[in-house]
Length: 208
Image (cartoon, rainbow, N blue to C red; front, top):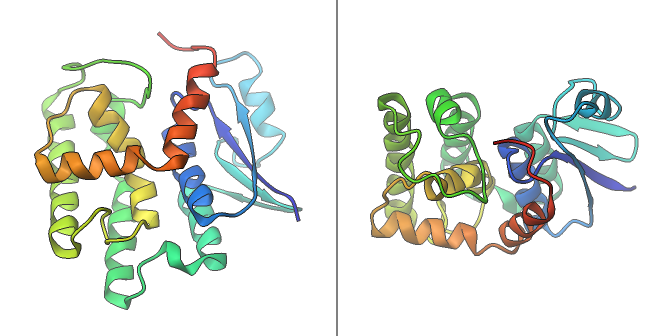
């Protein structure tokens, strides 16, 4: 069956980046189709491929799965190694993934993803920096316990869920200590991340 992931503009769509990284790391053959955001026909084009009116959305033949975390869970059913092997570690990885999925509203609002811009010092509101501090606490605890280079040693969906935050911290100049900077470097070094950013460079800029 054909696997197709529909994503928003790669420069801006943090939700789309997450399942893209997970799919690419799983090694599943899939096609990516980008729907540019902030265009007159954006809503119409998204409505053609998903009932949720949002991207990302994943098509496995006639089966349609939407929402970043739901897509990642579907992929993990085919590639169980995308979650840690231990039950306690899986529970922890799912907990922080869900926290990322549902929380950090100020960070999203004040430091929206833009993988190609340098906006150091912008968006540093009290609320956004509090969110950033909580993210760093999560990363530090996981890295100290599991030794890196990723949050649970090997790459997992937890890393995919936090990948957009890695880009935000670079874009907005959020300072990281040495272990967290090493983690950020490891995420940026993923082939899927390099490919995503390269694709973003070829897209038209649709936001100021």
